[in-house]
Image 1 (tube, rainbow, N blue to C red):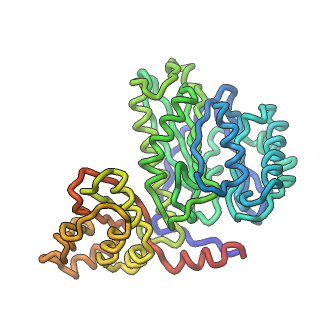
Image 2 (image 1 turned 45 degrees about the horizontal axis):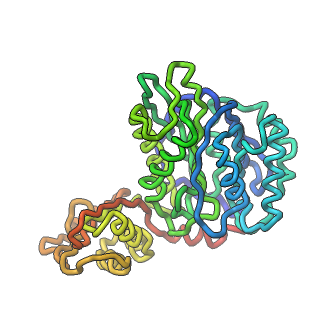
Image 3 (image 1 turned 135 degrees about the horizontal axis):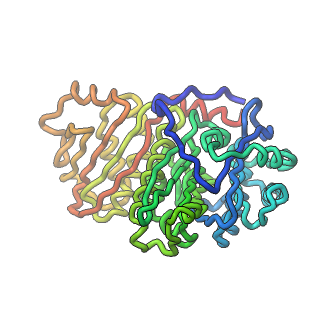
Length: 416
């Protein structure tokens, strides 16, 4: 196994205090799926009546756990979540689905929860069969050790090429009653989510019905996880789930059935904050990255067109390597805009690095200062703004990272 990567220079300096959420407990264990000397499986135990929502990869080659969750989420209820690292259980044929079902049956037997309320995820190498027999006897230990304050350890257990665990928290009010939202995510490579992210799980004590959770989660994902990219490769395992235990009802929070309920305004804002925080952390841990890059496109024919242009820039290896080399090479951005297939006017195009306008009306800006721009490119946070000159009101923001030699090294020996 390759050595673990050094901590990302963009990693958070500290982790937030994560208030325990009534109705959910976490535990981790070392099942020996692939790694030696570290935890590689986490269990989240959810109280009876917990509502669940989820969005999953639209890859045409989804993993067995994604197929499992997609089927079970229709029931809208959850009692347990099992996630392992080291093996994705993807492209494993009928055996993969059998192993997923066996994992769920072991968890169901140990917890006493219906098998239809057990959710699964696996992350790691694609194409290698998962030996679910390694979970036999592990769930009993997990249940015995489960505790409300175990979210950070759970996030650490599901890491693969991640260099740090990703967690976030926020509070909101529903009719004057405070509710909490905690979340965790994993992901560093194979990142351009399509409906979800690599793996991300969010928990709340708010008493919200599954249908409302689903609507809010699907909407919030568009401006967060679906607006990031590390390397343009959508994973076979992308999963984003939201669980609501409803425990805040005991403190007077009203039960809410629809996403359009005005009493959810504060909750929606808090959910957006948590998802965007987690999504940004995924980018900041992009394999081998040293720069966090925000790309904003304006003046497009539509928001959809703006996002397509922003993604074209964000996914360009030429743009990403130029940023890694601290080179403000706007010519590569021009090329990325031009190839996006959306309306753009070459002779009205404008480009900024931070507050420095480097291109204007299809030419290098008359006031361009190489020294000033080079100094800006040495920072850890790079903002790129593009007016594509189409004369429209379309605007979109996408977040990405640079592309370094370390990315190649990490992925060149990933399976070894």
